Length: 369
Image 1: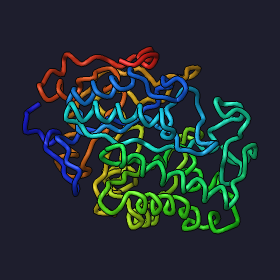
Image 2: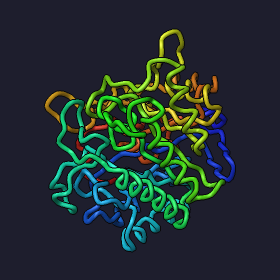
Image 3: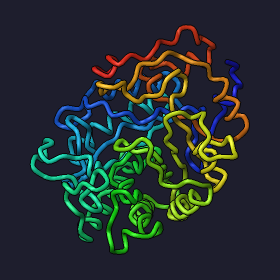
């Protein structure tokens, strides 16, 4: 890898200046007891900044809503002690010359009643469904919607106050915002359901509230996907025209960078073009786009049957990634499992030490390294 490779060219968007195009993808680790990022979490992110990552996106961190959490030991982004812990994280990342954004998260219907520490609180969803046709969650009222939107705004304001460089809104993978977008589980008959524009309304209002909370110059990243954890084959749109109806209103509402989640970055999104989801999103909006999906590995993350962990994978060529990046298909590249296996992945790639990269093994998720 040459030092002047497009992967290592600086990126600038307003006040956000990154040393290179490499982004650490957000990856849930379930290793924050009492929902507080510990010193091991601080070191985990510091090590990736020292390893050369241009922009770190945190694991999903829950906003201050009673039903935001769906999993044990995930970090929260509210409360004095938790925010003080996140302040340690961002200070450590900055000390290494890195940049970072927290990913604000509401799990929606992925929450099951009984998940600690909120206990019997059920998951909140547009229509009481986490899967199409199965009503077993709380149906959100208009007051619930307003409360959640305000929670996102408070989380974004906290991110700016703590000194983070941007904020990411998690709107993908079958969590709350995505559930409003997904017709299969959004069967509302009010202004938040029915037509595509109505199903998009919640996401737009979240982004507008976040923009109002952080001001005009603080970067907002929005992560979205076609696929859902509940249904890997699900799709929000089936054509470039459909994607335009999705991303243009989000762009107008205040999104600065789109994080386009796919399982395999090299796959075309629509027939008749090689462009992936990030490529189409960039073409339609004119905004920077992040691609993601098995970068630097030879297999996607979908678990093998009977297992729950991300799939193991070996290091793989970056040639196709670089070809697309050089063609300006997208602007930034999110790396996930390869960065769990190799904290210095960026520096190793830049130095041409591809043979030294470790494979990703499923047991690596058991601890922070």
